[in-house]
Length: 82
Image (tube, rainbow, N blue to C red; front, side):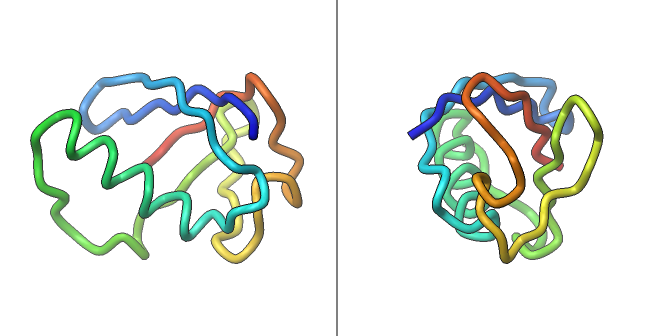
């Protein structure tokens, strides 16, 4: 498990999550979207497959089929969910 900061520009919010670094980005996006929607009491419009997770420092879009660990994401990194 690692702790990362997740920024969601569309709702102008930032969150801190403890996430499993061996889970695929595709699965992680679905889990993050569900948790954020529950917290903010909103519904997600659009297709989850169109959402991206980006490395905040570099702006690099993370590959949906790989894990955080495979892409060098570590504890205390900053990510964008767009």
